[in-house]
Image 1 (cartoon, protein in one colour):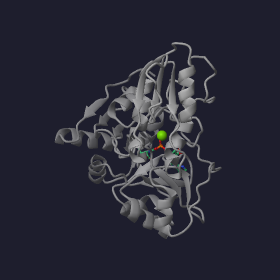
Image 2 (cartoon, rainbow, N blue to C red):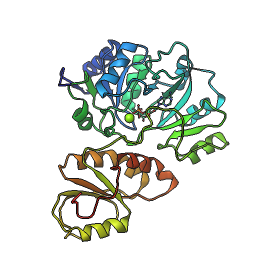
Image 3 (cartoon, rainbow, N blue to C red):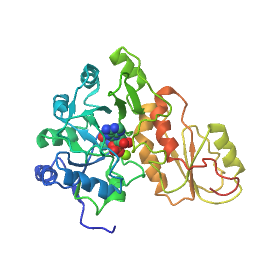
Image 4 (tube, rainbow, N blue to C red):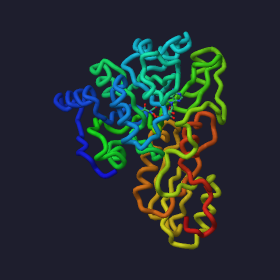
Length: 341
Ligand code: TXA
Ligand code: MG
């Protein structure tokens, strides 16, 4: 689909822009909004027509459920039924913040929002601009990440526009996202809470809040259509290497095929062939997560034939980063020797 209309860039600190964003949302338009995790593509969750436009703009299959964003936990009752006590406890502890709770949906919620499922994902985001929008809007905003289907999530305005300019009505500029990785999703519809998407809130934090075990399967079989292996993917092939392997591959590279290196251990020698750019990642997990999508978007815009990336540490609290990288990496993650990949 070619560009259909102009996507307006709105400054939330200008009252007329803020009002316009609200008016557009009330009219059923699509507005990209900042959250602390990633930018979301928002529409009025109580307007099925508006919600269906989200799927069109993203090119996302209509059976992939959306998260509904609320101003605060008190609104949960309007969107979910049979809410267990642990949901209120998690809400009190982590909202506003980067965690989504899966609950049984209230009867009034349109199946367009939940992709036909009987459950609903709810989240109260912490970004101050999104908080202001939600409080003024007085309803729920359905919002997936503001990227085209199966592409990288955006953590800055330029990244949203790269994928959705001309396909959405407006974007509210809230600056770069402070967390940088999508929310942890916890399924609370079964007997034991279960993490179905790794995120910034870890299992240890959840168990500490609930005083009970929380399941975190490596792979889960919940029929979550959005949970596909190939996801969050840059257009340039991304290859992941352990530190020493990356060092060796760089030294052994015998051609000038342009590559971009993303690393955190100073793996470059200064004489490595074909390295057109290197992006240095922070060692700290929180900082690393904040920069992750930005690094991938920047590398992807660099017109190299491949991205070679150093694998981050294999620790439990890095699981969200590994999850996203696993989905972003090319199917055969190690390039063939000398393919210049
Ligand atoms: O941090 C986030 O969660 C961001 C910001 C914008 O809030 N949102 C986000 O939405 O990542 P999205 O749609 O890109 O990813 C949400 C995931 C999808 O994989 C979807 O399938 C799953 O959550 N999901 C949503 N509702 C669900 C439900 N009722 N049951 C199972 N999975 C659900
Ligand atoms: Mg997404």
